[in-house]
Image 1 (cartoon, rainbow, N blue to C red):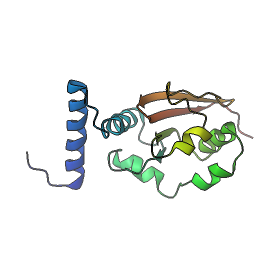
Image 2: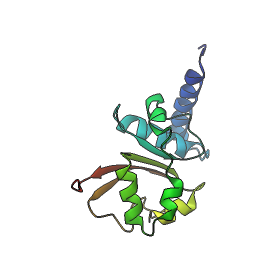
Image 3: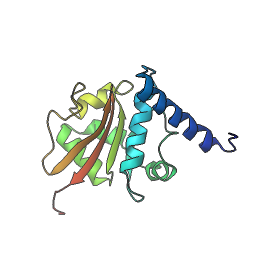
Image 4: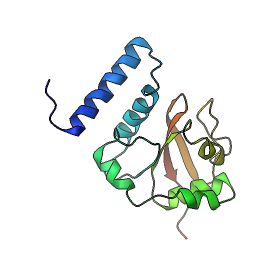
Length: 151
């Protein structure tokens, strides 16, 4: 098969990595990232926004990559005192998903109170349902459903 675009090459690579992981149980370090990207690509709707906290951004869908431009909130998250406030800020900024590489960003895992073993929150925020939709090694994808009432 001949690939003509950068996007086609990386999607073919993603599919190949996922297939190898499922068939062989490979421990390739890219496999968890590929599966996290696949999870967010399948779960996110066209108008959803994703907070991507990874070094690699070439496997999420093109529309999801556009939705993160100009939305960096890392320094704002660091200023807040609690995990509940941090999840609140993420939801307030309109993010509906969080994709996180916990190996590359262990401080974020600690600040958001994520249990690395279970992929769940040790201190869930009030009024925001944070659902784990993917947890492979230390890659996480969370869906946020904000139940807080508007001010």
